[in-house]
Image (cartoon, rainbow, N blue to C red):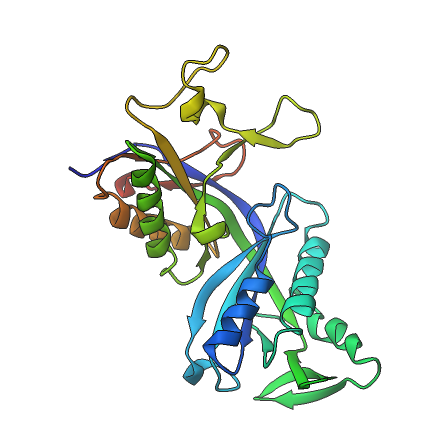
Length: 302
């Protein structure tokens, strides 16, 4: 019997984000560059950004005719210095994790006419004066001599408004059921162009709530949904009967329509998982963000 779909919504909040197209000689080195450049970027709670793989790009569609992958980097829009944070995150990650990865190059994805930062120029200073400007593949680039040959990076990196925090919760009668459902959901959502799932394997095992009893912490475990805290004094559990485990997926992306499409794909892929009881989502009644992704598509405002 399919899982129950709660009549609720996920509450996404605004971000700004950049997209970078990484290319490499072959899938092996492309995968290494993507993994390194998006590492330690699961949650803006403590990471400098939230990052992940958007989609793979075939060699026939990349500027240099090699296998490619688009990665996204998001920072919350509520930071007053959001543009500086985003630029710093992308610069550090491309410089330390793409430049250093054998055979790679980096190109811009988003429009860079009005909102952009000089990623290529700043990274090129690594060339110690030997870097130079060049047009490569019809794009204005910086070329940096390196031990293995040269590193090519496009001059500008554009950025745009995006969304963070789309989510789904999977309530399982067993721990395996919750994880299997979340794994299926993450794999399906990841097929939607324009989204990333920043947590390991796309799944967040320790979903959090805003705030904490400790003043230094901005988020903490969602005690009301922890199975092992059911019945503990001071914890008003909100778990449905029979739930042994909860897993979550987080979806960031370009816009609300993209998050909606990814969410519905995830629900369709997961709802028939054996021993999955309920699919739900986390929200804060609009206090965190104003972009709502309804689990029942007929409830979604036009």
